Length: 223
Image 1 (cartoon, helix red, strand yellow):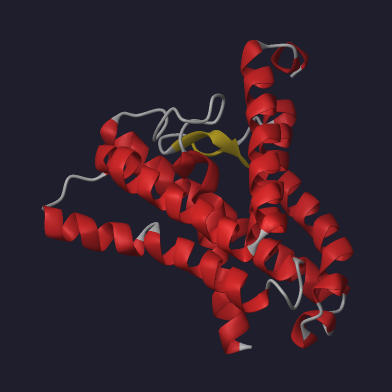
Image 2: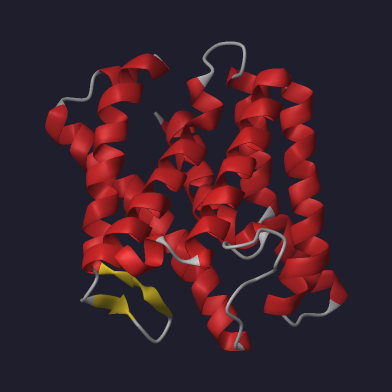
């Protein structure tokens, strides 16, 4: 773990994360339109340069696939942005915050303690220790931000329910990562792209966000 912290890969990943956070946060705070335009651009990049490496389909089926994944997820993020941006700033950001918290602490705990792999043939980097670290981090995040989201059914959650809610979203984030890992392993790829040094492509960075966005919107609609 110490060697990794001082490695070039770590600094590339850290620098890219800071830039990405600045871009996403800046676009979100600037305006609803700019935040949505950013995700339209991400959708175009994924569809034109990353998804074609992962799936071999007839053009009609490829378009249908792109509209479902990542199109439906990006559409969910844009819907949350337009519907809730002026009501509560945290609601549109919630899938991003929870997914990146799960990713970051899963990565840290996995590097530090990960000796029990979850599914090495599909995603060799994911471990049970990383999953437990993610659950813990998401739970702490939710303790601080859920009371500020101001949605009635969220505010009514007791501590046990909030923990189970955190487990659900962490598993969803991991599922998004596993789906992309499965697609990459089928093609013998390490990353879906190279636009983000230290992370890979936009799909590599947003795979868990896309899964959490769908789950969060579904819960808002149903509950």
